Image 1 (cartoon, protein in one colour):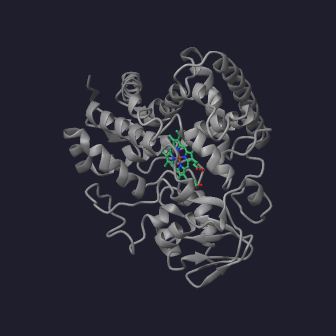
Image 2 (cartoon, rainbow, N blue to C red):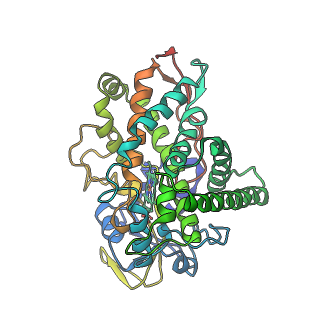
Image 3 (tube, rainbow, N blue to C red):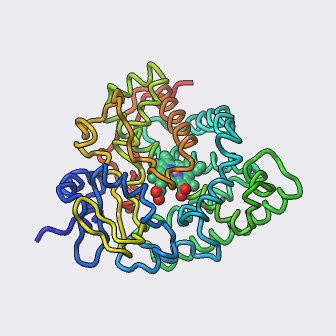
Length: 411
Ligand code: HEM
């Protein structure tokens, strides 16, 4: 008997290339089996549900809904309230608005743009530190440390504490990517301890920033007194943890998938080396072609919802397979082709609707800097194994290692 599409998506054997499974899945745009989640795989249907107010992201609603094999009821593992990723309006909107004030337009149009110099320095420092060009692992030496350093700078973590922050982020990330050989109790404890220590550290820093604000985001959030009131320390802690977690593994995978795709498409790599401005369309096409967030689980219907003739009953759990929607031939011509010259590219890689990626401008800039500098500085880079070994995680999908050799590293 052929395993169900759901099991095929979760099966590690398919991690390197899940796209044929998605192609099969799109034959039934709303797939439902037994008491499992409703799996939605076509572009327009996913988009509609991402914008549908009858679909909830609230972790408290989701926790009451059984039968989602990806549900993580004790995800927070701490006393923190849910972050705005896992809340519905109006709580979601209030916290997102308050977090956006010091981050993006209209109040802070320069925050992300103002980080360009810092991003360039971080990228340069990491490439300088690669060491032996004959054999290095892009994940461990570049993609992994990169986003954590960026979040530290965004939040205003003192430089001398960044190493500790990296240790906690690594432990939390490891718990999101279960290693089958690791003892689950040990791993869970490691992540729990890291969350506690990170929480205590941030609580101390928040107190300090309330007394002594700087021009970083944590200071702005800690001292804000706007029309939405101010954030409690607990809200602030879960928001800071959200920015760290949501911006970590995702960016790691965008940069790593990006380099992998460019090495498989040397023509595009060559063009990027010759013209760094091509990084903009390349990153957009990557978010369509190899999206770091493959699917959005943990959504629940608050009413009966009809999609393509199927009634999804109230209280059902949904999986929205963004990566499949991005390859839907009814939306994108030649969807399995990596084509940075594609014009009409409204992909689902950063989600859509009220939960669409908060950090999108930063994520784009990070990936653009990283890929254009890697393309420029690595001389004649080659993949040492293809496909590379992947992480276990089917949702935040990406290589665990990307071993590369090159002839040298340009200044
Ligand atoms: C390449 C990198 C990234 C990708 C592919 C990505 C993707 C996504 C996606 C698909 C969602 C929607 C989740 C849903 O609908 O439930 C999302 C939400 C979110 N992302 Fe990102 N993200 C990236 C980087 C970042 C960064 C760097 C940050 C922080 C600075 C960030 C912060 C967030 C937050 C806070 C949310 C929740 C938004 C809400 O619920 O209103 N992301 N992201």
